[in-house]
Length: 337
Image (tube, rainbow, N blue to C red):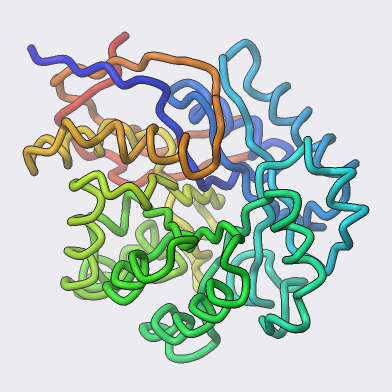
């Protein structure tokens, strides 16, 4: 039986939600990852020092004794330097959402104009705070990320010393932009390395694969997979694991988000193994993020064995019930017990 031990795996983009949903999903990530970048799109969003500190404490309480670092983020607003200085030690980055583009982003930025955002972005450069961006327009759903590329280029040119993370990229266009600017980096999800829109809606609609940005074409998936398995130094794993109650996924008006937290490492090991790229997995899930964000998370070893694992139908507590990707399916790798 083959084994692989991963050193300090990180999830650089995750949604924990709050309250009972937080209590359900946070321990699942803390069990298998050393740390994660926590998205701030709660209701209301995380926009103050107090809300950052309070949310982090709720996360730490939810995960119990697990060795795990929640890297906190602020929801982008027009912050001044004085405020950012006061919160700098409590956050890793600031997350920018175009208004209304995804779950709980209604109070996001209505216009991404370098001049309008200059005060905040200049302060972030000075304080060395990275900018994480959900890069989509409100155009045709398959073109939204591609249409956003000029915005990334404008930000990269106008603020060359600002570290910009293109979050959960889904297109060949975003991959090609990576090497054009020194200050552009990217996170890639599990699902976008594996599925296309065909898997979501080509046959019977599969609500638990529906997310934003939506899965794209075969050539897009292949471009993402190529840079991931090569260990490209500017890409890192960010699951964008986004739990929604089962009744909101299996419904008219299906909520956008794929819940991958409990199966992410098992599937990544299998994917890299099948592509003869296990030697590059540590770059994708650990080493690149250390360098991009200049972080030193708590050390943790996670061992997986090549042993079949049947994914549960759902994960639940007294009030929440969430269906994971690959529910009821058999994976080739398991977490060592």
